[in-house]
Image 1 (cartoon, rainbow, N blue to C red):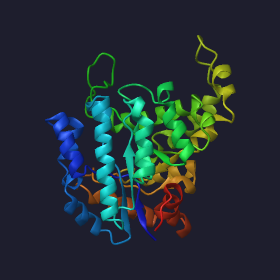
Image 2: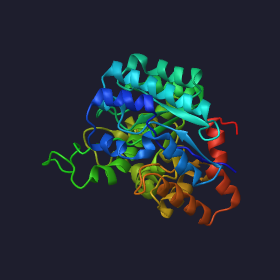
Image 3: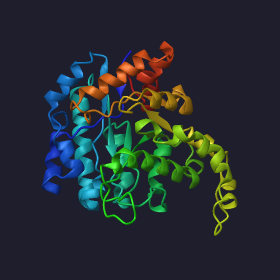
Length: 339
């Protein structure tokens, strides 16, 4: 059985150089990422991976922040291309370690957005594409982004949904920044959940049949708030007086809204929380949860989240068949891998 880590992050050397050329001095999220040797040092990455045996392998993806956060449309496209090219090269050179990679969509370049997805997937062999929960503050369900969802639904490849919120997103209206990194601890699960809701209620899954979305960190808040999401939102419109949300939103969905939320996929990158993984499995089912560590962003710079996530999966009260699905089979099926 392979242990396929479907959501971990890297800055390949060509991308890292291009990133530094673009932003100059690293700060906040980029500073944090750049301080982790495993992000940019391939030998250190191999040392960490070797701690977990020959069966452990990684699906590569670029780390946050989103390309559009620090680059204009043309440069974002260029960085996307460099990232995909360099990850594809790593996959070709080390196929046993890296059986696939995820391209990153330059969302602030709508004219080139779909073409770059096509190039990454069809020419370079990307197993899917990564987007973030907002595009410089814009929701992803705006009409300008729909060609992306149409293309991804059509080719059957998955979108990886990564949360994005910075310290400039204040916790209170009277303040100008988030304190104590609350924007990350609680803001990122909220970002994921809000984006999932926008995708459901804007009818993206009705318009683009077969759309597949993998949510980071166990599906955000959704599994924990199934009651509010399900029976609670059954009453959508009761709290709103200026619009008829029941008629305009709920009644226009082809199916009960909770069914759409259950069709997202989730990963196990929950920072060592057994309950979060259990909730994800209960809500999305064992067929829609995939092993992921979020390496190397842990207190040890790589090994901790991998080790602790494996420890949880290996000791949870689940069957060997369920364990195999999470570690390997779900990823093989969804990503189209050949092992």
